[in-house]
Image (tube, rainbow, N blue to C red):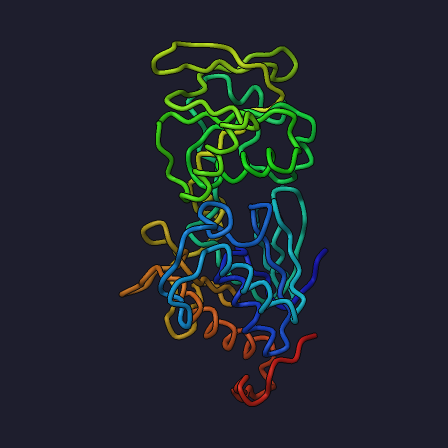
Length: 336
C-alpha cells in the first residue's frame, strides 16, 4: 500500500504543477498514469510541438515544458506509478480513499485529484483483423523500454513525431539490428528536423523507409515472424521482423472513471469552481478532464485549478490549521 497526502491521477503538466503547489504546503503527492513516463500528451504525442500560451515563455516545446515541470516538482519528491491505469476507487471508514490500478497496485490518501487530461489513453490500432493475436507476442503499441528491441528487427508504422523519433532513436543508438519505417503517405506529420533525419538515415541505409504503403497482415505461429506490407504502386510483399510497432497515437477515454460515482457531463467531470471539487468530498478534478460554465481547455487554466484545489485540500486534511498564503518570492522553495 502506497500512502501519501494526495493521490494525483494523471501525470501530465497539470498534475505535475499540482505537486509543486502541494509541496509549498508540505503535502506529499503520488502520481498514477497509464503512460510509461510523466508528461501526458505533451511527452507521448507531441513532445516537439511548440506551445505559445505558457506565461513567461513566448514559445516552449511541449517536451521541454514537461522537463521544466519535473525539475520544479523535484524538491518535493513526488512518487510515481507509471504504466498503470487507475481503475477503482473506494472510500475507507476513516475518510480516506484507496485507488487501485489495473495491475493491482494500491494507493491510500485523504485526497484524490483527477488530472487525467482527456482521460485514459488507449492506442489507436491499425485495422488488421488478427492484430490482437500478436499483442505481447511481437506487437507493441507503446515503447516502454528501448532495450527490449536490442539486436531485434523492428517494423514501425506511423508518420507522426512518435514514429519518427523512435525510428531515429533505435537506429542511431544501434539498438535494433534493423529498423523499417512504414507510412501510408509520402509526406510526414512530424517535426521537420525529424523528417529530415529519417530521410538522411534512409539514404545511408540505417533505416529502411517505405512510404505510400501500410502493414496489412501479421504472420507467425507462436509469435510474430513477418508482416505483409501493401505498397500503393508495387503491390504486396512480406517483411521478416521480430516486432511490429504501430505508433498511430492514443485516443482518450474516461474509462473506469465513469464508474466512480462522479457527476459526469459531456464526457467530463462536473466541478465546483470555488475549489474544483467534485460531488464526492475529497475528490477534485482539474485540467481538461473537468467541466464547468465557460471552461477553457488550456494548460494555464489547469495550473490555476490545481492551485485552488490544493488550498482546499490543505483545509480538508488540516482543519485545525490556518493556512496563510506565503509568497515564494519572499520565502523561497523548501523541499522535503
